[in-house]
Image (tube, rainbow, N blue to C red):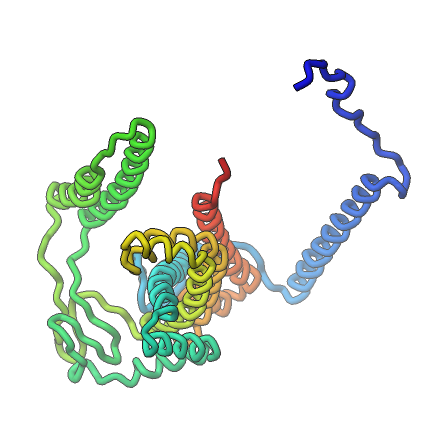
Length: 400
């Protein structure tokens, strides 16, 4: 290696070149084009706002958000929070938002599980299982989602009446009124216990990461499961017992012409959930299959040479690597499921679209109603995208 010192003139940064007010200067052209594009966009937005305001004034249509504080008089069949027709439009719309979230969150979880199972079955060495999975994927993906929702809703409406309800196991009834399941008499203590469970899971995850980091530093393994079990199981049970939550279950029973007690899953929600899950799971299955096939075959062969079973290889070696391929397109399917839930209006499930449509029909506030729908779906979609992008960054390969 030469001991000759480097010329300090070669270490200096090149001088910055100024912008010339000439069309031949590339930076000057880019600035002008950006100004023109922004000006055109602002002009279009200004024209749309001015034209809309003029048309509303000519037709004497009132605008504003004052209608949110008025009594709705709008019946809602199911809601996660207490609601009555005497409540305001704001509360009715909140019920619609929660109903949308209820179908989106449950649908994403169930569709992910079903799609992953079908995708793995599609790669099975069992000929029959593989062909059944392939037939399911091809048939469900080729049928319009709205048609599938109407099909499942018609099936549920064709079930027998409550007195002749299907009764597969004790406490479970399936009829044209929906699915009845045993439940608990929910109280505030149960809500605090559920919060304790969530905090316990978060604490267990952070403790596991801390224990893994310490093991990497000093090479000493640490048992994680005793602390994790105490946080995940012990904390909720202590809160439950300390606040005196009832332990007895609420078993549904036939009273007159309908069931009383228990948890009710309405036919509208049930049909929407089945349709969205079945449809989205078919696309997720292909994403999972492609992700698994993207892992080099040598990974399987090396793991089998060590004597590992195929299920363990798939769970511990292949799927963690395949996630880097699976997660980005999976995000699109989660967004599609959430947005496709707006088809609920076709089968009578009262989500944000259904309640907003009824609200704008009653009040005439069409612009505000459409704006509420857009803001709700935009917020949910951006939240899903941010979370999935964060998770994708967490599992991405990092060069040392």
